[in-house]
Every structure is written in C-alpha cells, then in structure tokens.
Amino acid sequence: MQNWRRRSLLLFVVGLCGAVGQAADDEQVAAGKQLFLREWKANDPLSPNGDGLGPMHNDTSCVACHKMGGIGGAGPIDKNVDVLALKPPETSSEAAQLNRNVASLHAGFFGPSGLQSNIILHRLSTEPRYSALRSIFLGEDIVSLWDDPRKYLVAMRDSPVNEHLVNGVRFQHVQRNSSAMFGNGLLDRVKAATMRGIAKEQQRVGRVSGRPAPLGQRLDRVGRFGWRGQTKSLRDFVTGACAAELGLHSRADSQLTDPFDPAPRSDRFHDLDEAQVQALVAFCASLPAPIQVIPADPVEAAEVKRGEQLFSQVMCGECHRRNIGPAKNAYTDLLLHDMGQQMSDPVGPELPASFYQSIPAEILTKRPSRVSYYGRSITFRTTVIDNAKARARIQRAT
Image 1 (tube, rainbow, N blue to C red):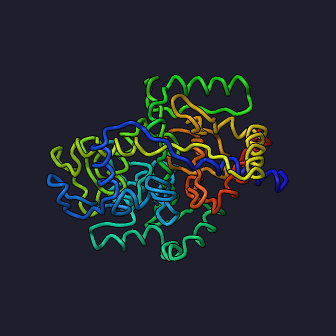
Image 2 (image 1 turned 135 degrees about the horizontal axis):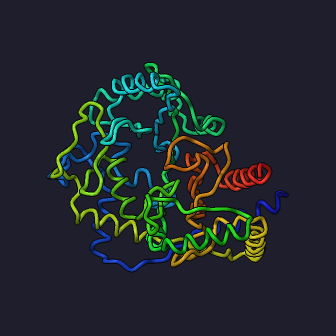
Image 3 (image 1 turned 30 degrees about the vertical axis):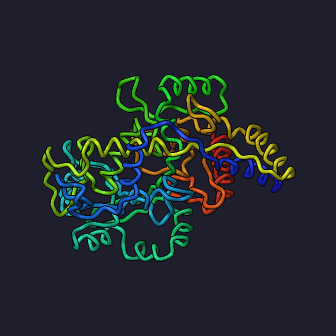
C-alpha cells in the first residue's frame, strides 16, 4: 500500500473518537464510577466482609489499567498483565516431576481440578516476600526492562513468548494488554445467533473465516469479551477482572490464590457485595460508544472518505464490521480469527494458539489505545500495517 493510501486509511479509522450516551440509572452509574476510580487498600472499609485489596493484585484501581483516551480506555504497556504457562511434559515421569516442582514454586498452579496450565503472575502483593518470588520467575533482566516500557515493548515485538527454566520447570511468559471498554454495554447485548450468522456468512463468502468463542457445550453460550473471547458477559468480565487484577472477591468470582496462603476462602468472604457489583457493571455499561467524526477541513474530510473506501477495498471491514446487532460503529464481529503463528501464544481457551478476537477499532486521536493483545504496536499506524502483514501471511499459507 502506498504512503498516501496508508494515511487515508488511518484518517478514516482515527476519526472514531466521539461519544454517545446510554440510558441507565444515574445514581447507580455514579456509585459505580466511584468504585471504578477508587484506590483500594488492604482491609478497605468498603470491604467489611473481606480483606479489601489483594493480597495478589496488579494495581490498586480499575482506572489504573483502563485510562488511555479517558476513563475506561485501554491500558498503557507498563500495566500489561504477566501470565505464566507451563510447557506440557512429554512423558509420565516428566509429569510427576513437574507436579512436584511446580508445587514448590507457586500454589496458584493447583486448582480444584488439579494442575492448571497457566496463572497470572501478579505485579504486586500485600505480602512483602512476594517481589522476590516474582523475580524468580521472570529473572532480573526482564524485571529491569520495565524501567523503560518502550524498550521492553521493542523486545516483545520480536519475541512475545519468552521461556524461563525455574527449578527444573519450563515456563512460557506472555502478556495481555488491558483493552478499552468503550461501548461494551452495547456489545454485551449482541445475540449469539447474530455472531453465528456472521460466521456462516464469512464461511460462505470465503474471504475470511471467523468463529464464535466457545464456552462449553451450550449453543447459547459464546464469548464476547477478552482477547480470545473467553468471557460471556460484561458482568462476568467485571467480576473476573476485580477478582484477578485487584483481589476483590465477590460471590461470582474468587480472588486468585495467594502463594503464601493458598487455603480457599469461605463462601461468606466477600470484598464486593451484590450492590457494588451491580453498580460497577452499570458504570462500565454506560461508557460511551465511539462514533465517527468527520473533520471540518474539506481536504481531510476527502481523505477520510478515501480511507473508508480503502478500508472496504482491502477487506479490513470483513472482520471489523461497522455494525453488529445493537452496537453501531463497533467495527468488530466479536469473532475469533487466525492471526498467524507469529502471534501465537499458549494462554487461552481450547483453541488454536493463534486465534484472537477482532477488537473494536475505537482509537482515540490524542492518546491511542494499544490494539494488540500485548500492546506490541507503538503507534496506531504500525497496528494497521502489522494487521495487513498478518493477513497477507495467512493468505500465502492457505
């Protein structure tokens, strides 16, 4: 694509920076906003039946990881979530050794159903000993790179999956970038039948091939949120994020295992009660969806129009559909697409490792969201080019 074509295409998508309101109970939304902005702390007074923040957490507030372009936006790369995945053993003796060694490293790898394939390696803990444990898994060289997030990002572009050998166990270290939440209230209302209809249409036409993210055997359960569509509803996304990222336990989701105190919590132990959960969900559902804004300058307006034509011409719109169900200007199909082996990593549902959801193209002009699963694209321009290259690689392979 020539440079002028790239610029036109960028102008078209960068124009998605408006806002539309969504009806909701004002008082409940306001209460949810305060919870979203709140700096939580250990033994927080808002959690009289729990322990407040943590003990395992990645930050102290929701907005810390959802703020680019406004409250509820994507997270900067220095807020990326670290995930450790176990490399599968090849023999039964290796499996037995793996269980013994992993048990001595991090209790989080053992859940109710036995050994888990991956865990979040939290950045922080209320336990002072935790920072030493974290550095054992990542190594001092990786930890020190966080002093310069852009330098770390350059390293991640070339090698998004890094292997570490700890106590005889081989781990793969990957990251997840916090995605923007604008318009998620509308995406939450997209019917599973709509998503399946789009997948069938794509299969029939044959230019791209998306698939709904499966959630068990029930046909009415498909994923809408998360980089691999692993979460069914906005409520599940909110309660899961509170538990995993802040250690805020609710009736729906338990905080993740503390390696220094792995005993499960009592069912009566809650950091968030039902009213708080409902308020947080209401606020997140109220976050404005993007709309297209045409520049006043006629030359730029003409380039936006040309960019829109190119967007269709080069088939960006096959995956980033303008409208899906009630979500207008969403620019997503909520389906999973094969992004090629260069984007593969071992963390996610039972799907090929290179499948990711086409996220909404809700880019904001002044502070663009990171639009790759670990924030690999330093600018929105590189995101457009990277996605074009990924599509070209897949087309050549097939």
